[in-house]
Image (cartoon, rainbow, N blue to C red):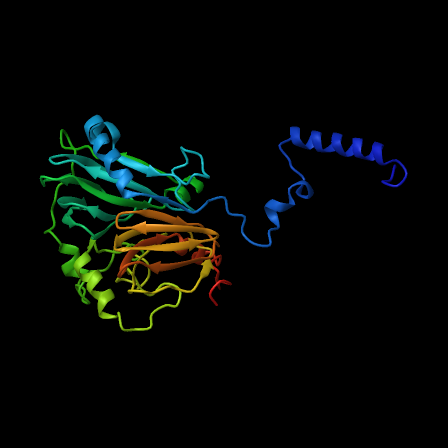
Length: 358
């Protein structure tokens, strides 16, 4: 047998032939791809990015003139990270974000699907979402949940366009090869029947009490359909004198009343207040996060990129990227959601203090 010292050229030729034969067998030697298996820290493909509401809204209205909800199934403008393929349905990490909208008088028919979903209302008032026989009338800032495999539809009975940020675990479900979808069909009916009172779930589960005669059908999914903006915002301001988090200011998590965990088993959602002049310390974590500016303006330093944002904008922070936030000209409120529950479920969640601000 030749050795690297005696006949290096012959040995390399033999290695090349060996690797080529393995390649034909759809086999790759670990030593040729060690970087994929042995990383000192995550090799993250996603990049920080921001989508400006003042640029999205005109396109949204234009789309309303060009295509109906029925033609589109859901009229959604998908927010795709610039580093991903355009058809990836992936915004950052294992979560997706998209801007969905309904023009006055429009209805988006009922369907159900495997991915968990929620929506944060960006603009408008008077449209509804119906989930599992219950309907809620939505207002700006409301947070509405749509657990996996629940019939849901939307309608706009107001005289103005309605827009919201859709959040789904679609990339994760696709990765697991577990994505199923079904349209609702009941004769000529394309929307589900409503058999619960409006805000039924809020009265049953959302006020610190629960019906003693009922057990949750799926305790990992929040039973609350709509977490009202007025209540959520008031909670933030009630705690504004607290020290809060050094990395996120006054931040509160939307919770599932059944178990105190996230509202959906794969996505955690938050609302945070950055007080006037507040500038957080930097940190990083393995959860990927989508942010939406609910009120005010400010900025974030994500890795080495500074992003300035204002009300209506949506931006992303990829996994393990150091970041910090600050408010500008007053206070700011940020809504956010992340794939943290997925990482925690498998023991992959990690968080560390940043190097920039102690």
